[in-house]
Image (tube, rainbow over all chains, first blue to last red; front, side, top):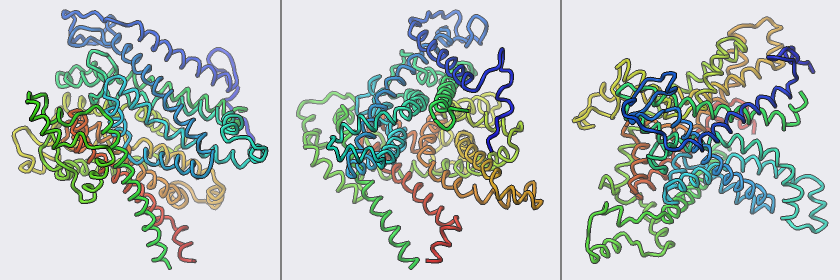
Length: 284
Length: 329
């Protein structure tokens, strides 16, 4: 049964390498692309408008073409992606905190566990997009509303994973021993359970990211949250809706494509990190 | 024995359903109550009124009533199926929802079936020819479509089929100037094609991916090896040993996707300006129509619950092992 894959030691671009190196390289390159988009998005401010160059097809000068005000769509897309990434970062951080707290809370006793399961069920019973809208309305809309809407609703998959993981860890002997020694529930949760679920959390966060960004784009597209002059990717796309019938396809195609690539990169990083962290596949 | 068990099962589900609905109702109500939306302002749309009139309106909407009383009244009305009056449509919420949801339901039902069938077929094709170009194409497609926002896919479809090829109208449920009740079937159908196509394109990815992986797993199992050694091959092998095994989880998965289906419908309806429940939800959210929005949340929660319930039942109906174990009891 144990058979090395034939292409494992094959030449890989410049030199031969094992799977671990390949995985690390893929992670590094993807992370580099995303970070550079994020950083350059931060520096792109005040895109010049020139009505002479309005609605131009993509060319070497304007990679993604220009919009109705003659703004370069490439710059706008980068700026939009930067903004979306930032919202994604904050939202994921919020979601991660919630799922860690709930996951650890579920370790306390049976009642707490049932409570967590109930909350997860409640959040899962409303379609996600409606839930985001309702939370962002609650926070009064705007950037803050979007971040909270996305952040407060993405923790369910991770919390579910952590809860089942915690359940399994709780059957271990050293937990019983610690309980018999009179350690408090919080101490056990922090010292015995938390270190064991860190790898799950890391993978969960990275895989949460693309969802957060996509949902952020979706609800800004619908018109909740970010104002039209903030060039978030959803705003750019909803603006380009007005020009579809005029045949300005590049206004919609390239920004969406860039979003797709960023999301794919995150998925790639997530899968590869999981490969590294999962003990079953880490030694391949 | 069997009937008793079934009754117990459905009784349990019913209790769960009621608890969940009450929780959803209270939860969404509290969230919207905490929001800075002022029903009086939402009603007035910025019209100038005197202080006395404003007070009358505040009294009418009950803005100063304490929260527990509000929740109590809301639940009481909900049981009587009275969801209040929509502020946008100036009509009972329940009528608006029934009207819009039936339009959406057609859209969602057709694309649900199409995405299920095509997803399954593509998954089987990819799994059978693992490593071939068709497998790679399906894989690339699935990865790409799962990372693409559904509204963007809708925009691309709109661009290709409506703007460039001009085969289909760009939007609206019925042509401008025609009442929705007067529209002919063809007018409805021609506007249904593109949203359905988009939803199906998006929806088939997870099911295709799942079917592919399951089929590959089945094909590497011992009993398939045995069947091969007996001389079975090609489609017969897959039909006899593969399809039955992967059909059940695939159908269950498809039923569990009601939540994403609804979310996809919201986005797609917005792109194609299809007058369904999703577009209504967005309008209600943007224009602070709280009663209508709450009603839609409740309806969508019921929709998702029904999906999960059907998934459970499909398990019961299709899986011969479960049936047999019931029979033997």
